[in-house]
Image (cartoon, rainbow, N blue to C red):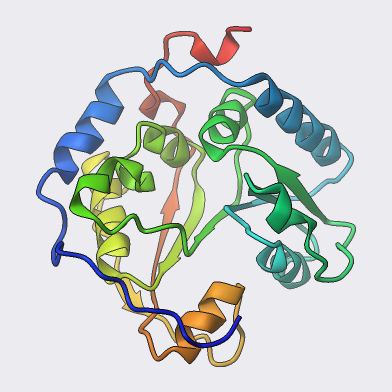
Length: 236
């Protein structure tokens, strides 16, 4: 990747006015989408791998080409690190061997998070690094904090870290956590300077393009009760 990334272009210049409505809807109404068979199979593979590796669990959600998963496994050698991405092409790119404590799996996060919650997973850390910001105002429901799966993400708990090159995305995420009652105080949003230690190719690209980087961190409890249920996860 070269440092030629365009800045976020959007007509939205503050936290979305309908954020609270989206969060409340996700908390109050069970999401009816069934779990896909391929998602169940992928989760079962990840579950089997995890059972063979002790130590705390770290999730790298939307890991892309897996560079962040590799770096996290080196930073936390006593943890097992699972990188999840829905793109087989991204996951197939060669960026060196995986450490014994790292695992990459192709899966849809909207299914994987719900299955992980149903299986009782409790990650110690959960990284969401440079997700698609969907910056158009009409796309709020596609951002993780505006999506029906948001309660499952929160319910998994752990130290959640979100990074983005769009400050509003991180601010919305922090406010949505507070609106959902997952934290008691609004998490701080800070300008992030990697100082040469770039976690993902996008982080490097945005930095080299002169864009500001933002991050938010919050420690969440495991709270399965945040997720409205209707048995969808257990349906075949």
